[in-house]
Image (cartoon, rainbow, N blue to C red; front, side):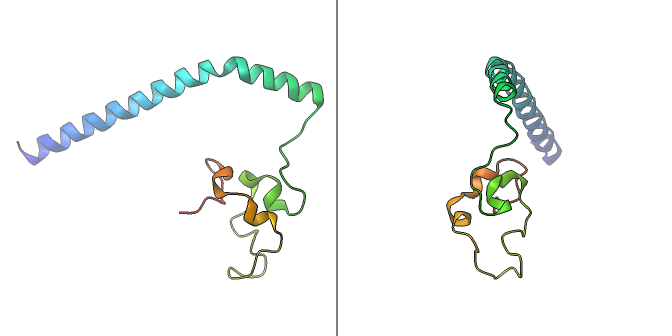
Length: 102
């Protein structure tokens, strides 16, 4: 098999996987619509604004809204000022969150 044929097969398989991801996302979003509607009702009834996990520092209140260097106000090697910074796992930042490390 030529290298170009391998490349085309690889590209076709990757495109198929990407298409399956898109289908999975569409199915999951349709399945979560009822729960999302209930959550919207609760938020509007209770007049909630945003999730606040801790009250100490702005980068621990809502980890997905944190700056990359907000925990290190003075310089990158400074110590953590607030104890909740060590309690909030980087995985809470979620997709697009800046606190998630490499």
